[in-house]
Length: 77
Image 1 (cartoon, rainbow, N blue to C red):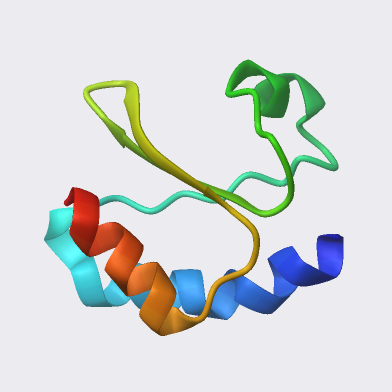
Image 2: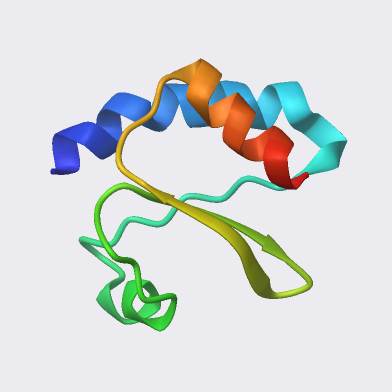
């Protein structure tokens, strides 16, 4: 499962660059942050969440292509 997260990390970085001031992208290493990960109750790896005002607006579980990730972001942002 960790492989899938490392597989999409470059895509996440590209999205962060492309959306610049529209959203803030952060990544969490759940291997070293078990308490933080359980705090957001991730249902699987990778879990992609969009927050607004501290509340989860949307969640997707599983690896996605760049196109799928952009569509997910556009639905919410």
